[in-house]
Length: 124
Image 1 (tube, rainbow, N blue to C red):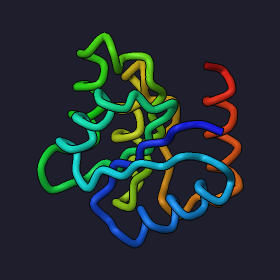
Image 2: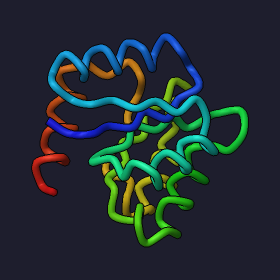
Image 3: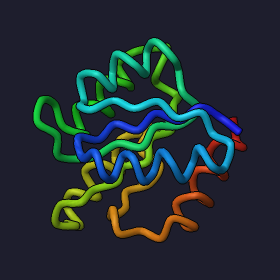
């Protein structure tokens, strides 16, 4: 199906999403933090990135801006998925970034997430 990069410091969430999309035929790579996510994105150039907001080293907004700053990763669509308080202002901040295609809660239905991922990877 495609190559997905999950950038999230929560091991349970990463594992659940990775297993779900692997079962659908995606190849899934994992980064445990934002810094690793930026390095992996440049190295593997995934079709889509799922990125957390709050991480211990650099957060999701810095990851998105770092991806945009590099010609090789600028066009990769990013779905931001947060487990923190879902704040409208935070959502608007992320949506201003051209590569942020969606901002959603980690409680999102997996079928909805799957549809968003498939729509974005089909457009490539």
